[in-house]
Amino acid sequence: MKQPIFTGSGVAIITPFNETGIDFDKLGELIEWHIAEGTDAIIICGTTGEAPTMPMEEHREAIRYTVEKVAKRIPVIAGAGSNDTHHAIATSRYAESVGVDAILSVVPYYNKTSQKGLYEHFSAIAKSVSTPIILYNVPSRTVLDLAPETTAKLAQIENIVAIKECNFSHVGELMNICPSDFSIYSGEDGLVLPYLAFGGKGVISVMANIIPSDTHALCQAFFDGDIETARKLQLQVLPMVKALFCEPSPVPVKKAMNLMGMNVGGCRLPLIDMEPQNEAVLQKVLTQYGLLK
Image 1 (cartoon, rainbow, N blue to C red):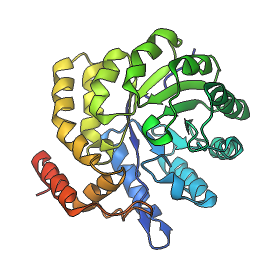
Image 2: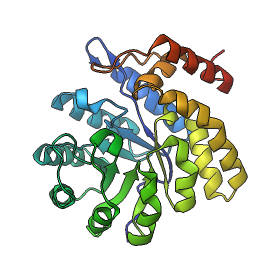
Image 3: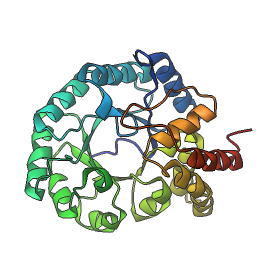
Image 4: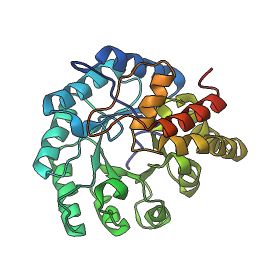
């Protein structure tokens, strides 16, 4: 019987950078804040963490540091995906060696494969480690959609335990055809409640970087049967979600954190600073939400 890695709000945590690399003091501060605010899991080196810009040694150090800092208080999930299966295996093995609770493995990008190729890619990764694996389907970034039938086949593999699904149209079918112990997590902050209503276990969230308590509360209200509170919280965050994705993520969420005085640094190229008109919209939404004075 596969158990959920977590239920509730997992933060796709940003990576704070400085002039020399990762600002580990700031990362540690953010991790402690998330644990205090009720975040249910930390996802390190994902898309929001700008993992594609990290050299291998930096990527590995970020994973190792996070595991040691969290010290088993909540689950740590490491982004270890790649469009090169051998590279994904090497990163997954390293993540396992330092004690992550799960691995997040994204659909391969750029060198597009077939559904059979996706099955072979993920099954090869699964065979290389014993750590639980969460698949990650994000067609807007990979330009390749993991079909529900392929996910269901992969879900038969013992240590492939869940999916972060960004294609909401798949969720109902996944619930119908995947094993009952296979977990589905929302990859869309604006649709957390619908995912939960279909039977999802939670969200891997960008907005949790700035409102961790409310993101946790949205999920917990649903699990407690307080659907009205969950509905109100979901509707309340929609303007913020729109602002946080008005430019490529994580540009807006890092800008929001800096506006809030969290001093997390900027993004690495090719990501650039926000356009002034979009920053103004973001500032307005943050002010309305009570995050800026």
